[in-house]
Every structure is written in structure tokens, then in C-alpha cells.
Picture 1 (spheres, rainbow, N blue to C red):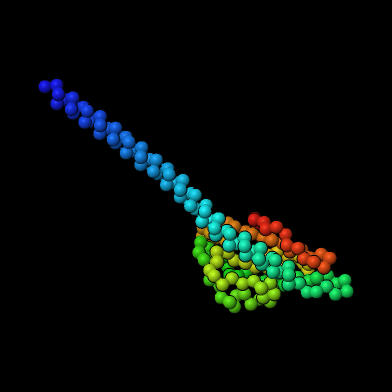
Picture 2: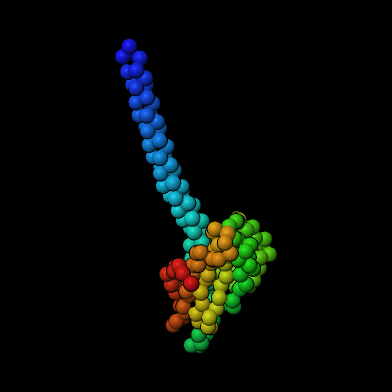
Length: 172
């Protein structure tokens, strides 16, 4: 008569152990998923930011090469400021913007031979701060909250007949 009671206890122990292992497996899978999701988000953000880094550097380099020639000791003049493309940050908030060829018709963009023909996460502009200095800028709202999380810039400074492009910086 003792045998059936012992079978019942063994079955309960086996079910408890299997349940605990399943709970542990679900917990481990959940932690791995959370870690993987965070890594994937970081990778996607980094990939999107690469567009901005490349384009801001290209714009600054183009601007530095399109200055007028120095004449009789006169200072080199950088091109005029451009509007933002696109005009408003909300046009690239959490999504790509497809610019039109006409968006890049400002004389300074043309002089720098700068345009983007593919959808973009950033908006761009050249800002002349003086006759011999300026900044190429790019900003993006990657998460769509209405605030630019990534702000990139590269200064252009002209002295003694030549223009130099400063390092790419991130921040306001």
C-alpha cells in the first residue's frame, strides 16, 4: 500500500523540478532578449549616425574647396549660409526624408558640389559665421520625440590663402 503514495510524491517532485527549469529557461531567454534588443538599438543608431558624419564632413570639405581666389592680399571669402535641408527638424523626426534635387540649388551647396539623392535621417546646412569662418551642420531626431539627439558640426577656417576643415564634433 505504500507504493502508490510514493509514486505520487515522485511525480510531484518531477513536476516541480520541470516547472522550475522552465521558469529559469524563460527568465534566461528574457534577459538575453533584452540585452540583444539594447545592442540592436545601439547598432541601428550608430548606423544612422554614420550618414550624418559622412555628409557633414563632405559638406565642410566641399565648402573649403569652393572659396574665391585670393587677390592682392585680400582675404578669401567663404560662401553664404544655406537654409536647412529639410527646413524643419520634424521632417526627419524618426523617419527618413527624401529631398528633391531643387532642395540643393542654393549657390553654396552647388559650389561645394553637395547634394543627397537618397533618403536621409539628418538635415543639413552650411552656416557662414564670418567672411573667413563657418560651420557645416547636421542634426537628427532619430527617436522621433521632436528633439535632435545627434548634432554634428565641422568648422571651416580660412587663413593665409588656404582653408582648413576642423574635426567633426558631436554636440550643440
